[in-house]
Image 1 (cartoon, rainbow, N blue to C red):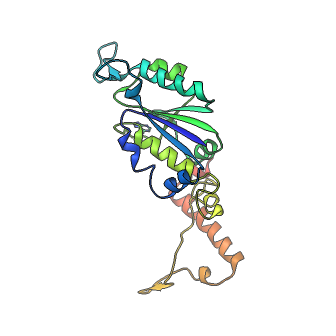
Image 2: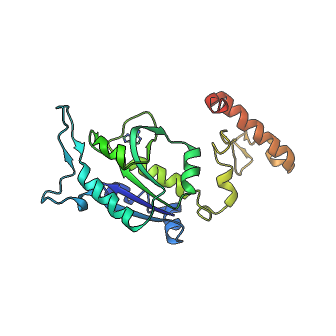
Image 3: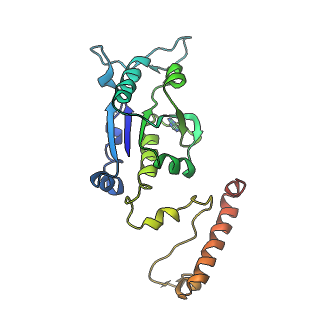
Length: 225
Ligand code: ADE
């Protein structure tokens, strides 16, 4: 898989995409992540990527030209399955969308910035608008990092135990059951007995019940889907 990220603050993406599981996935060649500085696609000395909005509102707007140039340049090199724009007014990101994106070959993520982006980019170039939640970030870079992280860990071979991505929270629209490790008794705080019983059918049944109970108590909206 290849993920191209277009940003005006490339530094913000350095660390999140270069450590731990993502670092290893890149080293193993499971994913190629390429960061593009939008300013490299400007043609003025000051490398301007924003301008005042028509209509006189406060705030600056991301200009069309550099974004258009960058996306057209990428599209001339390969086909992209999705061109994503990160924005608080996009569709709400969730595990279903992460699963879907992880099956694609090439995607672009354009990070929003400033007050917003010239709407014509959204109308003519973007194929998917994604919000990571109902709150506003200073820019789309952290959202792009979150999307990338959640997608890359699903790629076969990215996490050691293949099965563990399948038992993640949200994979069945259920929260994960509680998990524990040794010691089985810490100052009287005991691990549920069933987990140390060795009876795997009982353990599985307990985990399913816990998943369901936790979801019902904490996220009943998931059960309504
Ligand atoms: N940019 C600013 N806020 C955002 C959000 N909630 N999701 C995605 N991109 C954003």
